[in-house]
Length: 154
Image 1: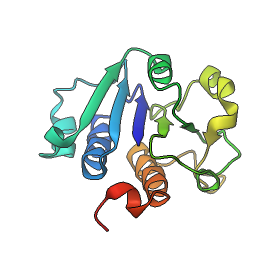
Image 2: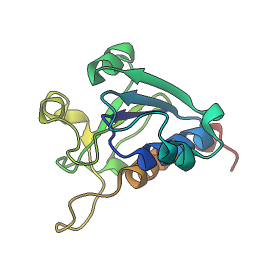
Image 3: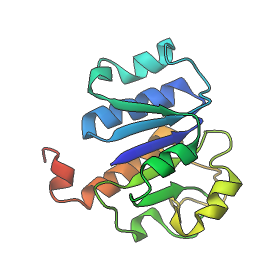
């Protein structure tokens, strides 16, 4: 499973997501520009001592990731989608693509991959969930669909 963060802005969120990737074996892909230094103390603190377990990759464009993994199923998480994240079948090598905290995924990308867009249900008055919470919700659903949770100890 691949977690792709497009231009993440908050180091604590990215650190939490890195820890999730370390605990689940998901690969973490960070698309620049990042809203923080990878040396940020809040990023490091949120990831605790799990950094050596994280398979992390950096890109200058989300299109680099999409090209590198062009044969992998992809799911773009956005509040603008109509399909729920639970309505799709995830493969073990799926790309789960999330946008930055303040703006989500770019409209151009959402339009190009409209059939791949999914959402987490929430009340109409809520703008969005916290990024690290959203990644955890969707990643564990994708892993739940795999035999033995994708090989995790259950």
